[in-house]
Image (cartoon, rainbow, N blue to C red):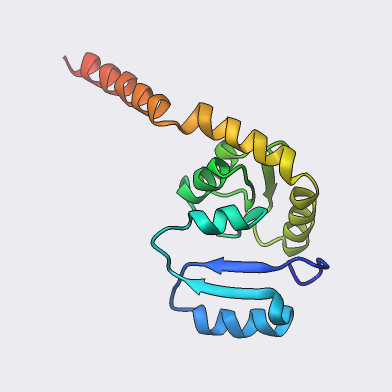
Amino acid sequence: AVAVLDDVGLVVVGDGPDRESLESTAAAALGDRVRFVGAVSDPNPYYQACDVLALASKTEGQPAAIIEAAQADMATVAYGVGGIPDMIEDRLSGVIVTPDDVEGLSNGLALALEHSEAFGKQAWATATSRFSMQTVATQWAELIGQVTAKSG
């Protein structure tokens, strides 16, 4: 998806059993425009250094990476799986793409890069309103109250 975008690089943070083959494939397609950094204890410097988070997972729950990126005013382009559509306001705070649609992922990245400042601000606002500790704690308290009321 990145290979067709001129002047766009890719930083891959994380590790896994397929790293060696992925590095080889990425290097063939992107040359020196790709960098694999492996697992890191603090991803924040990478969020600060990049413009957009790309999350091309085929299965997810509610990935913390989207919230972490939003806290750095960064939009996310991701496959619309699991809880991701509830986390991203499509074309406002990021872009949701059909799984396995590489052209859609490429187009989504181009769109998010073009609107990175506006999407990033909206991503921050969305994450703050939906996923702050206060909001989550309040939701948990309400849920626990409902469950205990039903069982009591």
